[in-house]
Image 1: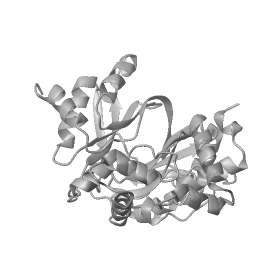
Image 2: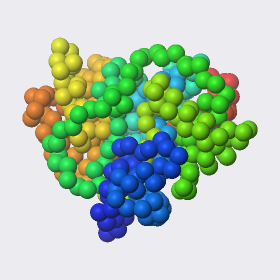
Image 3: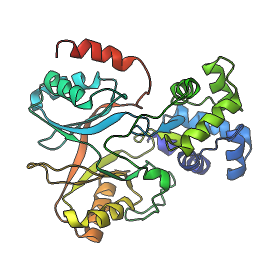
Image 4: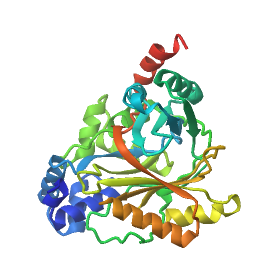
Length: 352
């Protein structure tokens, strides 16, 4: 029995609701209660329950890393299998590494890394390459983003080949270099707080305001959040789920060798599958012909394979590879505008 098995229909409907459209209102749990046909205390008790079971990790602001001026990339590394755990530990120490996995491929260590505005991403990657002892490191930045947005259907009603409309916030503009936005002290202070879990109280945005201090009000916090969302710096305010506890125990990265002249057609087509949470175009190399990446989540490996087969069948792209997460070394939310980067940089680059 998994944590997800302890949930009833109301829990599952609530989890769908908070993943997709959390209200930026004074009493958001009351708004959710109206939508679900229950009262506010029931919603708050259910939120507490799904957090206690580990299915819901947190409710928080989800920011667009590049739109905030950070540079980021997916990295694929070839590491001696006998030393991969040590290499992963070195890489996971970096504050900008939010995801770090062992996968079933010659490129066996995969991680995402981000650095703040003004920092050299290449310099950080060079240090990680050297200190981890990687034989080969490939930098795979986003060339075009077709979709980003994890939505786990907790009701179990979505078929492996189901299609959905990709919403605007799931396909934000991503450029190789995006200028850092001009953020006020209030906006910076708000970002530092709202990237953490929302309090389970009647007026949680007022609780955020208290954490910020300095006379900041609930109205100030909501105004900043709405502004960040309108300016597309914040993708959405929503739930962050624990996939495994939610019953989605399998995830696979399908990588596809899509002909150059079909990318504009195939990329959005692949993104339209409901089970695909992330879909990107990335660079190719002589030993890496795969240009489109699709991240698929399923309750079982067979679910993931069914979605990949549906994508292959619909698009006709037969040259692909399915990479499974063999071991998870790190999976955290990236924290923005903290001093951790300066500390890491001072400790790891003074002798570089």
